[in-house]
Image (cartoon, rainbow, N blue to C red; front, side):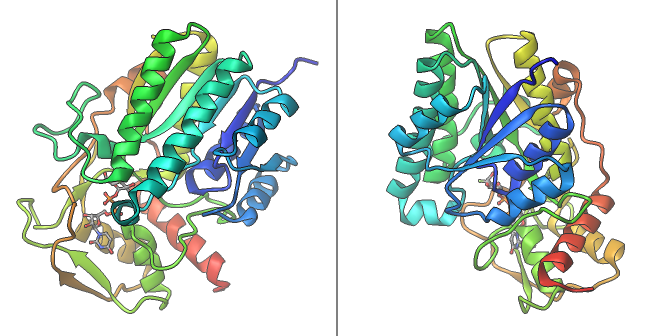
Length: 342
Ligand code: UFG
């Protein structure tokens, strides 16, 4: 029997990591999930196992703990790693920057060092559209300039991209891809995995679903006086399963040896959607109402950002497929599953 290609998924118990683990298994890869569960729950790993019917391996490890992370490399023969393990709350990163620099940079530097030391090849890094800041021209391409980060969180994304670029350039044994995600939303169609925010959600869709479920009283729409058609901000909301599939496509490219040794791809839909449009679509497709009010602008928000996805479409053979309607149905199905509604 042919040996399967094994992939380390750090942060694989998290939102994007768990969905990616499912798509990897379904595409025929062996997966090892490594997660310290600091901002995730083991139930996501159980969900991955239930969806795939495979007893996916899980290791409770902190990627910042170099000795423990090193042992994981000794114990598992993966040749590729997808690195999701990171903190991601923008506001918290402003009030506690060292927490973000220590964790997000420390874990990634350990990964790059250990991949190299153990002779492993492919590194896929979770980057973000946050690197573009307030772009001068829209949609943004991969050649659009990166703007100075407005938060330590955003800065860690830029710095990790640079660490990967420079390492691949210097060390012939490595290959790297950074995927710049736009706004991931929705849940797996099984409703067995999805986004599990701790405390008050900071992101729009979890706030909407929790308001619809009666857990939050009222959604605040942060600003209706932006220079956009309806006055609210524009984003590129990418379905989580589509996003997960982009990782499989990127991994295959690295394994197959196509393209440059270090590459960057935008992963979005290419379609801007306003906050009002998103809330109204959610209500329409799910037949529920979301109590809402207009509130002042949120500090640090960019007015508009959406992706030019032609590079990923062409080079990865990947495109976003799920409709916004279906994605928002899945977000509500997941919230109801979590709350034990119906
Ligand atoms: N919004 C609201 N009310 C809320 C939450 C959000 O109106 O309760 C609005 C925001 O103002 C923004 C849009 O909904 O216009 C999307 O906000 P999110 O917080 O869901 O997403 P962001 O675009 O702000 O954040 C995303 C990623 C971050 C990343 C950031 C910067 O979640 O990881 O983009 O690019 F850092």
